[in-house]
Amino acid sequence: MGKKLRTGNLPLDGKSRKMTTADSRPVLACDLPLEGSSLEKLHLSVEVSLCSRESQSGENLEEGNGSDNSVVTNVEPKSSASSKCVLVGKSITFCSVVIGVVTFAVIFTIVFSQLNNVPDNRSPTVEEVKAWVLSNNYSSRQDLSDPNTPQFMAAKFMSSGPYGILSSNNEAASKWKERYALSVFYYATNGPKWKVLFEFHRKTLPTCEWFQNVNIDHGGVAAIGASCSSGRVDTLRLVNQGLEGTIPTEIALLEELRILDLQHNNIRGTLPSEMQQLTELRKFDCISCTNLDGSLPSWIGKLTLMKTLGLTENKFEGSIPKDFGKLTDLINLALDNNLLTGDLTVLNDMGSLRNLYLEENGFTGTVGEAFFENLDNLETLDLSDNNLVGRVPINLFSNGKLRILDVHDNLINDFPDSIVEMQETNLEFLAIHGNPIENEGFPSTIIFLTNLAHLDATSIQIRGKMPDFLGDLTKLTYLFLADTTFEPGSIPESYQKLTNLKDFSVKDSARSGNIPAWFSKLSKLILLDLDSNKLAGPLPEALPENLKFLLINRNLLTGTIPAGLINSTLSKFQL
Image 1 (cartoon, helix red, strand yellow):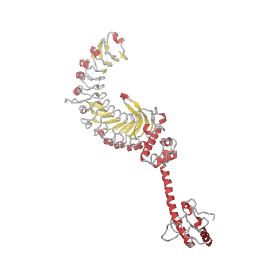
Image 2 (tube, rainbow, N blue to C red):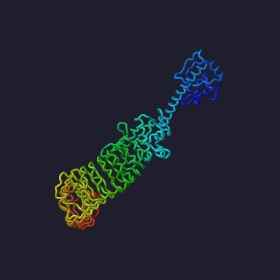
Image 3 (cartoon, rainbow, N blue to C red):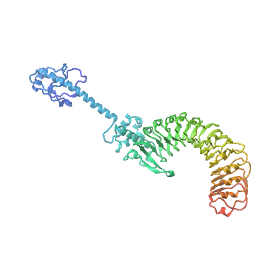
Image 4 (tube, rainbow, N blue to C red):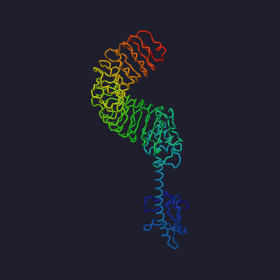
């Protein structure tokens, strides 16, 4: 015959139709098996001579219309030629259906495999990685098209090494996704020029070993790099490692991330909105990232498990979003050193706050009697260098937990003098300097702050005498009363009880009389600043043994310089 029936000639719609070879003559049993099809595996016993006779007679075989569509495997020699060929036609119909089903299954498998790009135990090609990333919406097509993007470079990285193998297994796919996300982060922050890699981004290591334990301050140890819990990345800590660039949207692929600590790097741009998907995040610290900008995103309020949010020393603008009030578990909030404005009422119901740093912004509003009254757990509150008006928030003195209160350099003009004794006060640090406080007399409220170690009242306009009662605050290590408008007078004798003092200044405070000899008893004193007063007489023969800085210039002193002072180890001596 010379020509064989090919699978492309088979009917596809299952209807009864004539089947012909390429030269348009009827299909005969002798044309079997079909080349390239599974019909080659069928063994139909058909007499060749019969087919030859039918071919010569020119009769066409048609597909049978009976109900019996089973394959005939033996044709009796005594049957008529036409019935034999009809049975062969039925067999061909059945087999064409089988071929159609098998072909569809094969094509579906191939297409599915191409879409998901799941090679079997081999490193994928870059194109396979890109196809996988696109099919899972990890990155955009545009980002994967440019060889200079972090996404393309990460795809190239993932196409090499033993840990880039693609898999449809859920756990393996999740780990692959995390590795890809970290690779994108590496390239987005100029990874090749980081100070130290700490095993980060090594092809030969599993992702959960992309870190090293490093000794940190106060004797602790921290894992620097990417570390895991239960096989999933939960910490990315790269403090002061020279990162430079942006936080990529792929950071959201680290679904189990709990700690993201990028302090003291050069991170620029806005925070990607995809970060709101990091619902397990407990700590996000980008203190001194220097160039994060834009508004504080309201979606941060969705990260309700957050305990620490540090965005100090960046370039954020605008007000604090109302949605921040949803962070009811937040313990530490640092927004200092930005360009923020507006009032602070949104924070009043964040009762879990312990440490709140808002200094060096442009916040406005009034500090009244009920200021932050619901923040019962505050331990540190820094409101310095803003535009707040009102009063020193003495209502916070007695919350029993507040240790540090800094309101210096605002527009506060009142320091209420409460006669109610404060119980359980633990305030250790109070800075009110640089405010236009114009009280008549130094507020005796301070006498109740028995744990006070730091008091800075520089440049306030309080009238009256320099307070004697400060001598009873014997835990003071730092006392600055410089540039004040106290009545002229001597340095109070009661201050000799302040034996823990290390820094003492009454510069430009209208002090007169002699320099007290009892200063020599303050053995811990390092700085003594008596500059710009009217102190007279000779210098004392003895000075504190640990004194390093002595400033006594612009006074009315006379006499000779004691030998002990000449031979002292002072670092600075202004006479």
